[in-house]
Length: 599
Image (cartoon, rainbow, N blue to C red; front, top):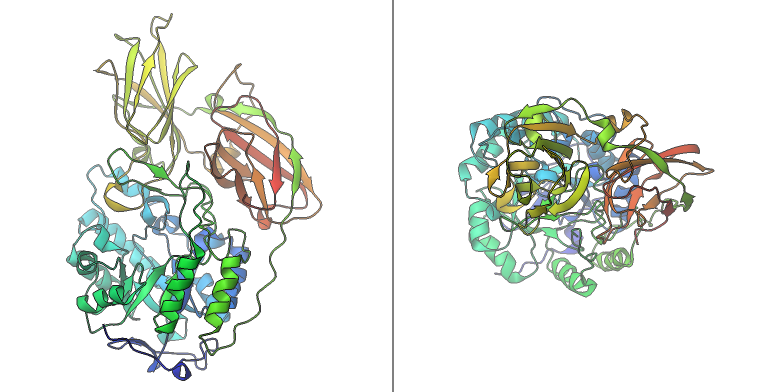
């Protein structure tokens, strides 16, 4: 591949919008802004992972590292949690406002609207209500899927089309799907997506993003769309893009300054020297690039996804999406940030602003909690079913589902759950027998002999995040097939939905739990003289979910590596605050404190 050099004097002073409307276009070898060569230096962040109060700060932090562009994923399932009901206005759902703030801060925008995005986000951004259709196929021309996609595209386009650079906004390019060449090869599907966006008023150039390998680029790129490389780190990578299509520019659409972490792993901390080498190559050769991610934020609630690369593998992602990114989870500049800032400053002609002051972080002394109730005291009216059904069939995304039946015939022996998605506690007559975790395919436990005539079998199942990447993304939660005892299929089930949403938690009623009950809620209050960001330390607890002032901070699990959950200052208040913890295993309350850092 021939190298090309763009004289720095031709780079547009990108931090000022000299006119209201701009034209962003693709030449054969480079991106053009108003007809002049333009190098994209982008940092990615996701509005849904950042409290709205911190949007402007995180954008300013990105600008102060030397970037001129913000890349942003839009998560379909975050905006259409219920079929046909869209939220683009409340809290950090207001994607148009995020984009407007980017413009106010002098930043361009790469829009990454899906419908599928991956992103270590639940189901890769696809809404789990699609899984209520038993034979649904996604990311293809399945008419039921495409009907839902068309509705989403129309609603999102209405929010953002006025924010394209041609209309005076900051959006310069929009992505079609995401890393499709790693999944499938339906070019009709990709072309249909492009047509849908155009029909709904999106007229800026499009790009695709795929690994820098021939088969991925062939399957995932479409003619006329710029080629994103995940990632582009060498002449050889960019040569692959040119071989795929020599008539459009290519760029490193995901350059990785950090990496994701699953439960039971160590925090990912990639080598910074390798990153410095990659960025130096991109800057010296005037290649456009996007840092995935410059700031990760947090998988609040039940938004974390999972990986699986075999039929029995399951790797759920942490609540924290710190990602070892240059701007950490609480918005602070890291040594990696300053390394990149210094490096970028050597190659750009525009002035890089000063680094904003970090938000205040506070410690909170130990908080005493007390038992509130147990999950067994909060059971709703059950659904009746011959065999277990997954959560999605009852319009539930994640949370918990309790499956109950009587043991008739076989009353002891080998119990097999096929398949438990994702973590199950098995009880007989109210006594915990064992737990079953989906990963690895070991779904058998021994049921001991019972003195009851018809023992009651309870299986409490937690969904821990829908798979978000590769071939196993059709991933329903709960018990997804059947339960057998010594090979006999168990029938006649009562199914109790327990969504564990913020609305569900508001309905909890105090009730004394049975001795040694599992699945306990604990409650406490604490007073603050001042607010600030904090991390609630759950190291005294086993596995569960934490809610602060009604906000679901996410999951914790003592398998690690994450023991502390981020709580932004905006979710705290001066005076009295409330904390509720649900723990699967503990029946005695433990203290919780607030720390100033993730580790």
